[in-house]
Length: 101
Image (cartoon, rainbow, N blue to C red; front, side):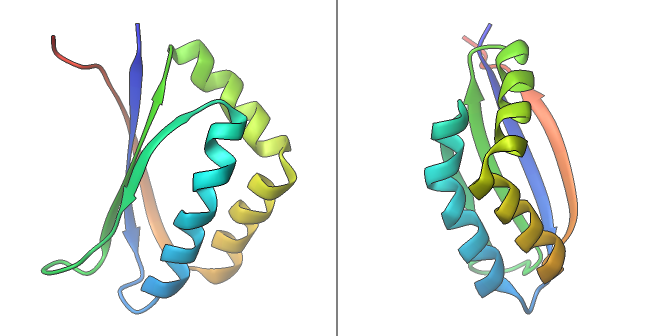
């Protein structure tokens, strides 16, 4: 069964540029590591501290493999470190969804 990883981020409302740069780097990294990146979304109007990401996987097992691969990927590890150093992601919540057909 295909699944979609839905990530809701609480981001620093005055560090949008840092978050956007972080999100853009994943567009090369995620597909290389096994995920189908549907995209990142960030605030435009209204609430300034909530952003989202959607990534498709063939299965939960494929996601687990992806997590190991992305941690070992030098660009992936560097992007995780950039987020930790930049302190622009305040909270991250993950849900796994399936499409209703």
